[in-house]
Length: 161
Image 1: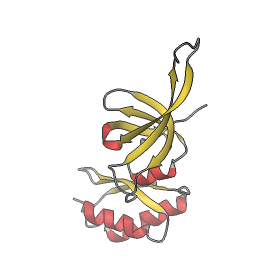
Image 2 (image 1 turned 180 degrees about the vertical axis):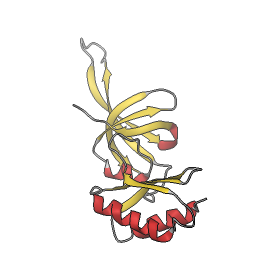
Image 3 (image 1 turned 45 degrees about the horizontal axis):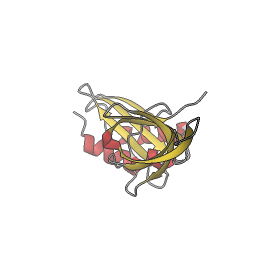
């Protein structure tokens, strides 16, 4: 079985000196390794290849066979770590809360912390229609919501076509 802690440290070490950060590292029972990475400036094929080479240098396939996939976290994938929230400040996001509310708004702030933290406090600005007393039509107002990633089923980039 692949040592997941050694794998994680190998991935982190291979990213030093770059703005890359790990999003998710999984190892199945069959030694299928999947490494998702991200960056504020984007992920290119050279970055994925460098991490692949570092993992292959640290883990001998003759000793223990494994499959390896290194790639960027997709734009439609839910956000998993603080670094993804940070890079999306000012962007439209879709949030599904654990109580079933689906919210669309702008990610306006993220609390301080490490890039790889999975427990993230963030602020979402949503538009809400409010009917003012005596008005004929509702008015759209901005409302600020403070949320935590643990209270959400997902938070993802809101693609608009």
